Image 1 (cartoon, helix red, strand yellow):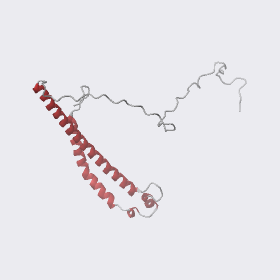
Image 2 (image 1 turned 180 degrees about the vertical axis):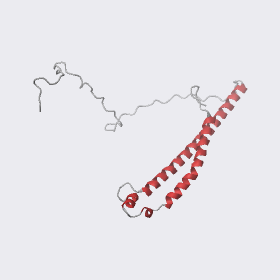
Image 3 (image 1 turned 90 degrees about the vertical axis):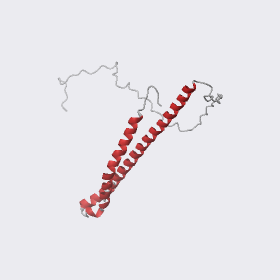
Image 4 (image 1 turned 135 degrees about the vertical axis):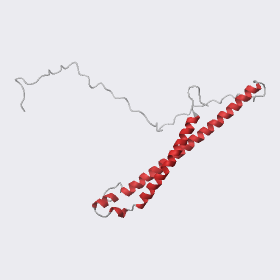
Amino acid sequence: MAGASFQIDLGEVESAAKLIRSMLDDLEGPANHLESVVKQVQKSVYGTDLLGKALNGSSSSVGGVAEHQQQVLEGIRSYLANSGAMAANLLQMVSSHRLTDDQNSQDLNKVLRDGGSGSAPKPAPVVAPTPVVAPTPVKDQDPGYVPPEAPKLDYNHPNPVFPMPHAGGGGPHRSEI
């Protein structure tokens, strides 16, 4: 099925997909309860005072609590749907791999049973590949992402021509500004 350096344990994948599906089934009830609670809350519940207006989102451009609750609920529903599709895809992959493995096993057994006699299908004739012509570049075409040039980092080295000032402090020429 895979290569010698990479093996997929179909049993583990199938088990994980069924576990994901089971967990999603467990989350469906709480998600439905949350949805019913979110839909019951009306904007009038928050009142018309300053706090109520703030909770309704009238003082900001990002919306109120009810809108955010609806967005969260939509995100949860999207997560559940995507996770369900992933579990279904994993189960489909396992099924497909098992069918392929069974077919390969049957074909191998047939070859071994026939002992390599002439009953095996003949290979298809080899056809010379057609030459590939490289496309000519089009001028004034967007090159896509072009990485910036590397920075030149030679600006932090001291110049040996100028002596470095003596470190110290004070003395008779000290400024008292």
